[in-house]
Length: 335
Image (cartoon, rainbow, N blue to C red; front, side, top):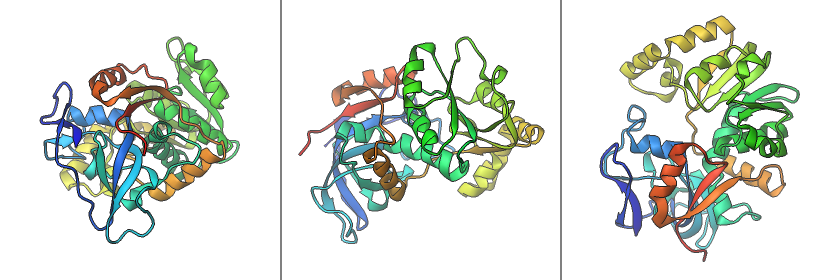
């Protein structure tokens, strides 16, 4: 099969080459991939930015989420059959969705929403799970609470806004003025142009902030959360508490603690809680997200669909950070 492979970290672009087709283990399904989506984690993986958490043996196939058709099932799998249309986010130790086939544990997938194309379904798993786990599992967002979602026009932001509104929250978001109409159509109550306005100068007493930027933007989040509030980040640094929960070695926990001393100080000063979110694949939550899609509660936003052989151009476009919604790779044909 064809797959996009990196042979070394910081390789400028992956190489599409012929590799052996994977075999399904007893708890796996083998999926012929129709579409996959590009995510920032793919670029971080390529550049070695996640080696402390995800030390891959190279060469490795890139790609994290997908939609496609089941072509084989493992001996222990009873909930899927050949021909099922599924979507999923593979486990972090078995990435490789920029390929024609993927073997994936059946617990990490779900049946596709009936009202979505393969391309639209491929846009949902990683950003949907990340948003759901931030807003529902960690923040426990309640009706009437106020949440700031950074980067409202991005892949995660476009889904997170819709979910937060479904949970009954008041939603502020940052984006460029060109995208105000989009984020407001998704449910944003307040839009802030990050080019001209620092959100921390105009917002106050928020229950939660969902940070997708890191750096100074993350530090500023502590200025707007009320005591007892929460700052959840996917772009900041993992702290020692995360390292303990994730089960990393003691020296990594020590390194995380040293690297996040400023965030720990900000937690104490603001009487808020900082959580680094490293999304976990979850087929049951994907099923919930599929139900939301079928009920018209959330809709994936797609920037563009790109042929597989134009992967490198798509990665460069993703790196530029201008995509509105998700960038989708069209890899195979529908059955």
